[in-house]
Image 1 (cartoon, rainbow, N blue to C red):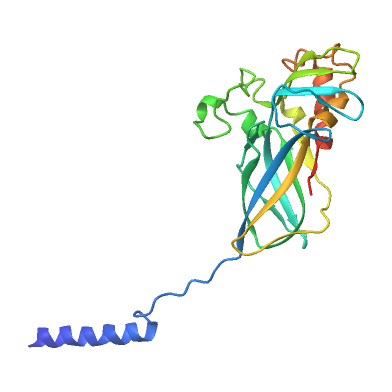
Image 2 (cartoon, one colour):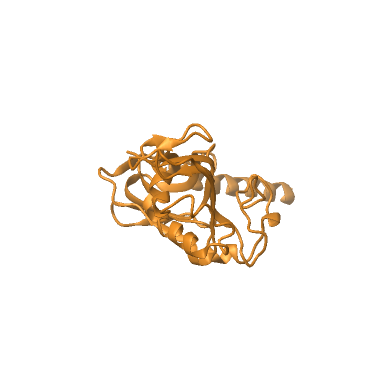
Length: 256
């Protein structure tokens, strides 16, 4: 009987405790204020959207550029809201190619955003310490076709690869071009200006920032395509590689 009384007492105690702590009620989950950031990167030559590989697109200066390969890495992405808070996405790497435009950057808070920044290339800490075979697809750091790797840890990843043909004016034939940009010292920072009006994103919604990648503007840094057709590797023509890399921050601008 004592055993039965003890069990009964225990049941009563548990009932009272659960009653006081709402054990019989479902927990209420408060929605968070998170949203999702996407980057939509559009390949252009001057005012021409590049929708055909190998087609010569003419710019406002009468030059023409055809792109068979036009790709680059993005890392160190950040976006700033109207209060000045900066959201970053550590460990996020994107590989923009001719065939891929839209990328998931990560999670942000709902609110208003005014500017975005990123680097073209792979941050030195990663570039100096890893090789593509350390990764498997779909990681953008895994082996790519065409390759985005110079072939040794000394040189590291190819930050930007451009291949196709170009001409300086309508009187000259197009010549093959091939430019590969890399090395820690050419890890270029892109800071886009304040966007007006601010971007607005609601709770559990997505914000897509549309950015133009203008290879016509970038390759204006090449004075003569026939005389400067290649940087492969960047050690072959370091001065031209430096010149092209210096133009990278200016090739990006908001599309809307």
